[in-house]
Length: 493
Image (cartoon, rainbow, N blue to C red; front, side, top):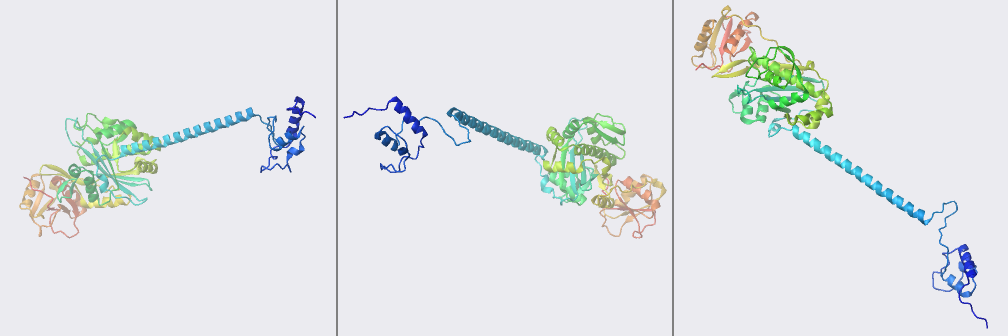
């Protein structure tokens, strides 16, 4: 009887290992628990006994070499290399994620910063505590539009304590790159919403920005689309930020009530203090016209300096100005306007002042517009043309012509009172009486021919009111000039 050997010998173990390594493994385990060995790889391998062969058939294999095989032509990779590559890819993914996160954060921060900066500039441009927008009318696309520009020039530190304003109606045509500035005297006499006549500035003093815009719109008979507002401190800050302004001064300025600066006539480069003095000065012989010229010169210089800035520089100026002026326009609209008007010069800006004259009634100084001349001027303004109208001729000597006085307002004793006043001034009054009907609301000075226009002008200057009218055989009078007193004249107290 032959004894069975227990286990493998060393040589058998090595031989079996070599055979297993050369075999195709992985498909020899049957799907059922049947002991059938048909179609198994294990029956192709030689074993030292039946028990080992059966164990191999059941998938119990020992001492199989630990290696990874790949198809021909592919690189054989060790476990260490594989692990290193896996860690490297993980690091790349983590770094990529961090970079992407940082880019997103920077982008979000940039957008947030841009929005914050834009919002800040919008706030600095906005009209504070103003009802102006309620009185504005949106302009048609690409059409010219009107803007009211208003400045409160009052400075409590001045010894005079005078209240001082600057007011202008500005027509802007972006397509033609043309601007027209019409100065409006702040003491212009107009009818306000209460039905009474007041200085136009009283609309602002009594009711605010919207009332002032409405008064200008009604007087000029045009819709107002935008409103710009500033004050003395704002102008000083703007001039300081922009640098000294070069302006043309037509008459020397020496007005202690306006400021301490003396400004000689001619082209001058002025700092903030002198600019404010120039804007306030009013001690001129022909005050309304001279004041308008000085204020227009400053407005034009400021406007040209602003529109010459590129977008970034303009935003920086608005930021630095910190509310020096306010307007109803958005930041984008301001930038668009500056882009459209960039390169404009003072030669592209028409300037004018409301035609009229000063008068004093009941101790109050007013400026009265000449209705016909104002209507003619606004026709030119609205057409985008130069609004300057012919200036009236120089006044004639009072005793060089004859004068008829008529009371056309039904004011008791008006004709007699004004005749006496004019006679005392040297006028040759040859006839006094009343008109057939007391329907005249405006004082008229009528002259027969061109040769007496200067004579009529001397009457209006003496009275401080009156509109010149050339007669075309409508009025009946025998003298050279006819004065018809209207209800706008008030008798002396």
